Structure formats: structure tokens, C-alpha cells
Image (cartoon, rainbow, N blue to C red; front, side, top):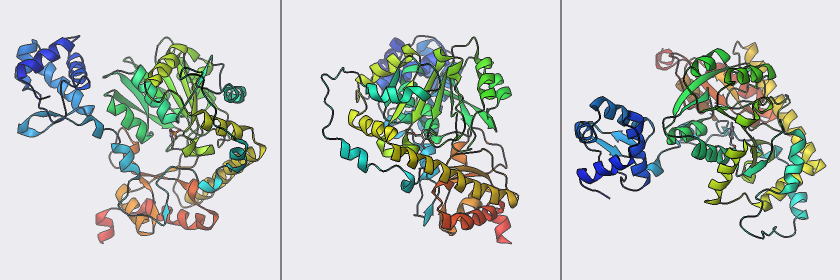
Length: 455
Ligand SMILES: Cc1ncc(COP(=O)(O)O)c(C=O)c1O
């Protein structure tokens, strides 16, 4: 609804809890959320807002910056600041990482598991005769038998487990129920682009913390914690993109750093079944401040769209209550399929074979690169994070050989000048292509940009 400046300012005043930049940004977000401000509408000039709401122009300008960073508004030179289409925000990094103008003979940019290594559904599906019914839409949203099957190797003693439509659904629910505009949130650098997109879409302030060979860097985390941090998102195993698995010493050190805080740690574990390392979860020390998500996408298939999660009771309650306003629960039919796969000895063997195959493919490429002077971090998973001399040159060179890889930029929060990386899903490389891909990567890692190639 396009309205008069006076109406708009009183709508903002009604929603202004605190006379600060964050308070004003909140008020504008609330006005967008309530439909008072719509996409395309222009915000009044900074001076007008400042005078009418008795704020300093600096405060208003800082609020506009916060809103710009969150993707809620955009400043368009002399034409002023406009509200953006909220539906259009949110998948920038993700698209940048995996969208390509052309198809590749061998697309290693995707981060998805090899379909040939997923367990067979036939036997499990054959055993399903009818879809489970629900007595009421308020029935227990989780199959009790599935919880029973998951309990024995759950990483800590969690009161309750929930099932959601994949780890991203779980994280979306956590973000929507636990975080607020302007909250400081620690993410791994490099990290998982869709998560960064999700967090940016709600306007939190991202603090990137580097990942070393044992997980989040403790010194960098310590300095991030000098100001309150609402949440830390980390991947405990086979971190995407680096392949790093958090050591139990590092998990303990992070728990120590967080002691006395209310910071929620969200553990996004997408490597269960495929990881050969023990799982270190901060839930062992801080169950009251840890949410642990276990995705079955890489081990059992992305299209099952299932993940299990535990979280402190109040958090899990908020997530479940929020879900009731949407899809309600994750299909019990799919939960039955997952349960069948988890219990079926053949499927278990297929997942073990997949884990061994991914490990062998990774080792082949990583060892080959090391012999050629290219050292790759991490120890497991379907992706490798390859340092390259020039990111664009490396991506283009590989593309010219029919090999798709993801550029490193969308994975990184901070950018060190001169650093370049590509993420390569080596888990998709079959036996016959391993040497060719290793050679191509070794050469692409050294490829330089325009000036180098022009000579
Ligand atoms: C680190 C990480 N988190 C989450 C996901 C998505 O998981 P899901 O399919 O369960 O939503 C992926 C998938 O590639 C991932 O690598």
C-alpha cells in the first residue's frame, strides 16, 4: 500500500521499541512484515525520518545500512531507498556456487552424493503396504520406532528428538524461532552458502570464524565472543567445503569458551553414515544450549528430505509450534522408508560401501594433488577445497575440459586478497575419471588469470 509520508512515519513510530538504529531497522522490518510497507515503496528521506521520529540522522542512516545488509531495502542513488521484494532475496550465494550457464560432461560443482552409491529402496518400499494414518493433526510428529533406532548413537543424552524435512528445514526453523534481526551469529569461514543466504535473509550480523584442521579456530572464536553472540553454526564432520572433522579436543575447547553464555550452538551434521571419525558434539557438555541436526541426504538420498534433530526443550517446543503453522510434520511415510533403510542389513552394507568408496575417491585425488604440490585441507567427505592461484581462471580452465567445479567466493565470509579456492565434489568421480580429474585440478590450481594466459 503506497501511503502518505505522515501515515508511514506513524506506522514506524508505533513499531519503534528503542530509539536506536537497530530499533528503527526493526520497526521498518515489522512494517514490511505487516504489509504496511511493500516492495518498491520508497522510504522517506533520512532527515525527514530523523526529525519526525526524534532520532539523529546518523541513527537513521545506520538503520538503513542494517536494512540494506539484510536485503530488506536497497539504495538507488538519487532515487532514494526502496523496499525490496522479500520473496526475491535469499539464495544469492547458493546460486553463485552451483548455477552454470552451460552443462558439464562431469559436474563436480554440486555437492550432492553419487546416486549410484545410495541404498536401494526396492526392498523397503515393497514392505510398505499402506500410508500410516494420523488420528489427528496433533499426533506425535515423529515415528517412535525411528527415534528408538536413532537413540543408540545419538551423540548425547537429548530429552526429545524431532524429525524435519532435511537439515536446511531444521536450520530454517531454528533461525526463524531463535534469532532476531541484528543478532550476531558466528558461522564457519568458509561455510555452507545456503546457510549464509538463510542467515542473511533475516538480517543477522554474520561473524565468520576460520576453520583449521580440527574445526573452528578457538582464538578467532574467542575474539568473536568479546561481544554477545546469539548462535554459532558449525558442521561437526566432513565440513562442507573443507572436509574438516571437529576433534573432540576442539569441541571441548569451544564448549569452554562458551561457558557462562547462552549462545546456542547449532551443529549441522550431514556426514552421518559416511564419516569414519567419531562424532564430537558440544551437546556432551552443553545440552541445554546445543541443537544437533543429523541429515540423511548424503547417506540415504537428498530426496528423502529427512533430518532428525535434538535441541533444548524450549527451543524444540518453539520449532514444533512454528511447524504446526506450516507443514505440521515430516511425512510419516518417508519416516517409515528411512526407518526401513536404517534397519535393513543390505542398506546398511550399501551405506558402508558408499563411505569406503567416497574415502577412496577422495584419497586418490588428494594424494595425487599433494604429489603435485597442491595441499588440500580436511580429512573426509564428498567435497575437497582446493587452493588455486586464480579462482576464475581455475573454474574456466576446468570448464573448458568439461569439468564443473564451484568457485570458492560464495563459501567465504571474509575475503583475503589474493586467496583463491574451488570446491570440488570428488565423491562423484568414478574410477575411470580419477586420474584425469586429479591432473586437471593440479594444472587448474596453478592457472593464472588473464595476464598469465595472454602471454
Ligand atoms: C553442510 C550441509 N548442511 C546441510 C545440507 C542440506 O541438508 P538437507 O538435504 O538435509 O537439507 C547439506 C547438503 O549438501 C550440507 O552439505
